[in-house]
Length: 291
Image (cartoon, rainbow, N blue to C red; front, side, top):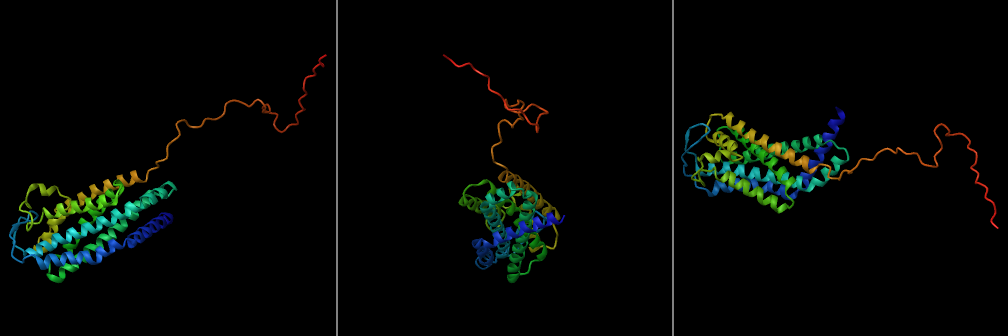
């Protein structure tokens, strides 16, 4: 038990160090999240935006800037978490493979990545929620943070999948940006007239968007939509496990024919049972001299 705990602690420490070395990701955490959330509040009109929330069936009319702040926070948190996990997986893939081939348990490597993802998602969700609470007070801030947390976990798993499968960093960045923008923008009533379209229920953060909106402007809890988001998280986690297993597999070619034991005795070998005994010298046959 102590050995497994020591291996898990060591792998987690190296993962956190890898995240800390990603200066661009740290800049995104410090500046991008508050900037995007604050600009959404300051630049979008505060005019009421009436719409019907699918999660509760209520007819809500929140201020447009507050509604956009929630979707902006979701967009920012998912982008940053997905980028952090993509960068860590993309740059550390070869190192993980070498560790796995050297005998380091892949279970401990996976648990370490999961622990770093949970920690990063929790910090980002709390940070974004705190920034929003500066401008206005959500009805249920703890559920708002929980919705952001679940969305960040989902995109962190997506980042692991992209980091394991793609071969260029720019491809992963473009994929993450496009997925997050399309996912969240289509669900914002301020931007999309089809936010209530049934197809939006298939988007990765549909559960989190509904739960976050309900937490911001309603006193009704929506556990079913948290469950829906957890199902998305489970699906992306399985994909990330499969991708990580494929990335850290042993790619060395196996021998076509396994070595077989020798079944023949060398001509010069001593007969069985005579090893260790003194053998008389072999005499050469006498040949008569030629005339």
